[in-house]
Length: 101
Image (tube, rainbow, N blue to C red; front, side, top):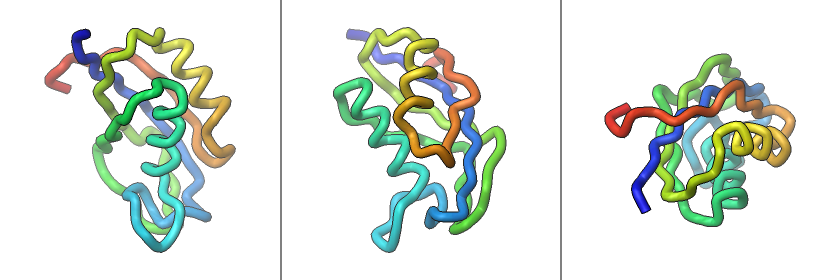
């Protein structure tokens, strides 16, 4: 199967998180997003972010992308992610992006 590059735009309240990046000292936004994606897509994915946030920092318009072999419709992915992610993390949009994005 060909690889797809999916772009997500997120917003989140980072009050209870150690920031974007996975760290051993507490929950991260990356961890929450990757866990939800694994649950939906049934494959390992690595979320790549346009810029990281620190502990307790909020984000509006955070751009993330990941590669997948799944043919899941982006509208369905959008709805599924918002149904699974913690209430502090919201997907604003999900769309296919160019491979070079």
